[in-house]
Image (tube, one colour):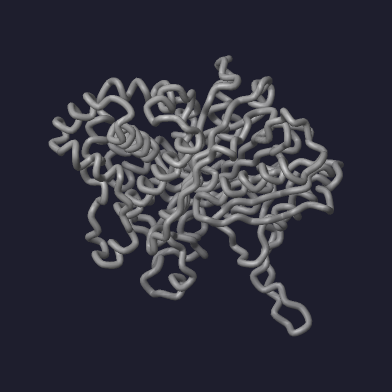
Length: 492
């Protein structure tokens, strides 16, 4: 490998289901406030059809990546899959590989290399970023002339009537990773990692499927999480700031200097407001640590009616959230109450809104129409950002950016990235906007039927140029068993 080469991402692609729920319509159906939802959540989300699942979406994204970038399938030595929506507890990326092989054959192309690693990465919404880190290490260490593909995909689903229903979504993003990146460098040497066990935060325990209280109105097999909204928010903020601050330590740069010098900030984005909360929280902690804007911190504290000393104390604390929830249950208190209050005031200031417009606007309009993609939520924002930058002919070559991934309450990653020379050509082929074209807006009856596993009235859709579930095995004989095994086919 060339000593000056920068390993990272050379291409990206996306797939989302065609079925869309307009959140303004959803608010009319459910009696929720559209004025609030459009600010906090976004504008719509996607729902998978009955013919697809996380594996078909991932395979669709990978095949698009190969076709759009003319990748030689025989050079792929690593296919990593990040997801929390697996329907098989033994196999992983090899299922995606099997579909892609047959899709390639249907197109008259060779299969993926027989000598290809096929790992699956699971840690809630962070699985895709862990897969990206592994692929980058592969590209730097032992790939030789081979390349890696990472695909992140999930189905984010919640019970109807739950507090998470409006934050649903589905889709997949695939990335080509090479020893010499053509889109952006992935700087693992200065990345920040953080983890801490959080017990009941956003979990999918197998045992819930056998409890009578779980999803009583849903007829199909479902994957609704167990979660507590406030506790999940505390966990997100706590773990994200520790990962970012570890990255800043490794970069040897102050928070104030970094936040103002970085070109773009991409966060895990379960809904519109969450990354905004995270950035305001990080900004206040940076001020509290004494490296910038002490006078501004005092003014913000006065408006929030909290003491500066309390914010400083919280910025140096290491709360044990698992111990707190174990002792207090649903009554667990915000461990950063003063910081949160100041961050809330900061978010309303013109200065901070201007900062968001400068640092977090690339691709933001596109992802408002996507919903939550779990492990693909951060990658699809990055993809949309680079696509927008190319379309707007922005000069971003070699400018510092950061990707902040998050998984449940337990772990986070903050990774510096930089667009490389010639990134525009790779960005122009991403196709996020094309993946969103020609949506099928669901009526209330169609959405509820699709969500609950009932027959969908009046939904006329014929799959084309995509993978579908062909059938599910039902054999359970001593000589041969495939009970529950899903089979797939490519529809040209």
